[in-house]
Length: 319
Image (cartoon, rainbow, N blue to C red; front, side, top):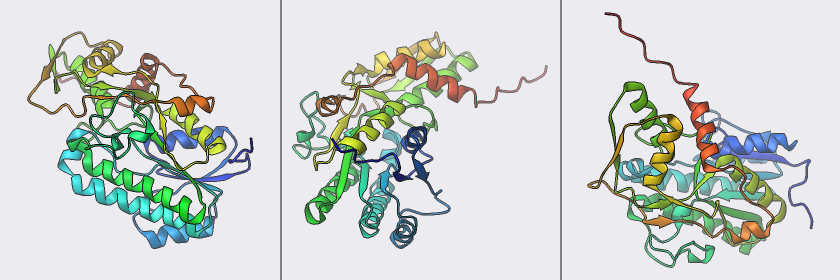
């Protein structure tokens, strides 16, 4: 089969400082590709004219659209306008500019939250737009769905070799550990790290602990994305996950064990749970010969080690 991403390809990674973008830079660089990148201060991707000018001048062979405004339940609940408007602007700007600059390949990174809240499990790609979305992240999900439709439209109208990947919950080096805007796994790492540091007897977590989630290390996602760029060319989005899930309660105990926290873990059931279950059918990726390699325990341990090494110890107050 023809390699759709030759070894000589120059790749622009939009969002290269984020969790996914930084993993893509690591992987593409390791494979010998020249990687193009711009910081937000150098190029605001919401500015369509500036984005178009950059792609016309740099002429990459492929674009990886990993730039997005992302966050957990709290961030989605408090800033819904930014989650829909910023993501729509970024997507419209980058995808349109790639077409204008005649970029041969583009990979758009979506999210598993595009699927209906009560979709049959494991979720197949054809579940898209078959039911209501999860209300807690609807603005973000709708923006990502719009991106899928935009990619599909460029394929159908212009024959563009643009594709979409829909990853499950991601984690790894470069994740966001901010207590106000992080996703569940980095939030748990930080909570248990600080609880152990401060000698707390109890950690109270949001929700019931019963929702089930699937987690993929971001380096496994980067490997999957390269596989797609090289081998896949179709208008159907492709799920990327590990195919296994666990409850948030189980995840919390696993993270606590890795961190070394031995206190009580309780759940505040007055807080929202989100979607009851979300695990992806990854048959399409397996057919392409891809499978994840990093176990959840090993991935959490490596992520915690990397993040904790950046944390300054709290100063000891003298008597």
